[in-house]
Image (tube, rainbow, N blue to C red; front, side, top):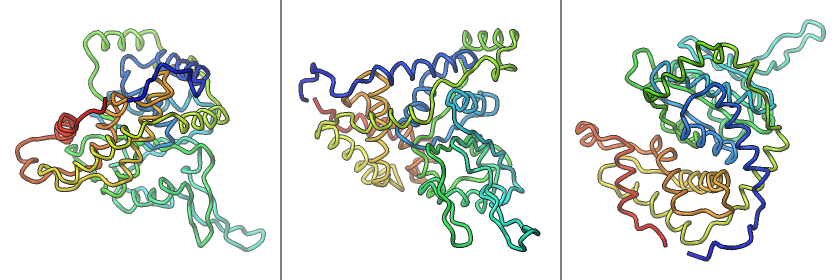
Length: 325
């Protein structure tokens, strides 16, 4: 790999300071979850949507709300329920008696950061309402296209599929998420700290103690910087080899698409930037790959019956592909 002891091509000092401010603000309430937070920040800088999965009570929704609070842009929350209709998300026509015409009233999805709570609680018809807006950042209604504001980010939460009363997200919907982040239980020490924060009222009054530290203009500037992060050709080949292996792996029924390759590239650049580097290393790719691929691959029925997981298959692929030096 090329010599990396060079004068930085991109000055990341402002970006790194902004990232630390975001971490500090969220850290006032959230204990631990370092990897989850790093992936969320990387997703913002890579302009990608995020799916948070975990059992109830591990602060998925709270983390998403806190992240939105640290960014000084409009925020909306949509609670997905079994009776939610697409019009409840996208908007609908409302009759205006003053001029005798129908006018489009935009739904709650028209915001900069949209938190969709328990996305797998609504049936496929409502989930499908998100297809266009997540991929093309626009809503088409009655032949008219309405662009979304910039930046536009969807953070969705879901409980594990095994939970009763949920609807599995289709593969086409999952593919529109840059990351699927598995939110884990806290450690014993972290849980003690959570109890201390609760006892001191930090969680109940987080809106008073967490402040916006990043503007939309700053975010766009940092995204432009991330897009200029240097990626050596060998790293591009490494990313392609990993994704190609998912299509040839005997343990997988469905491999990842080229969209996954692009996602790994963008996310690796973002993670390199928040790590203070203006170039991507293989370690950046290795860190990012599980979150990018775990929701884009489908195991064969045999592997599922054996109890294998997507993360285990991704780990085996990473060990199989030679790391560039």
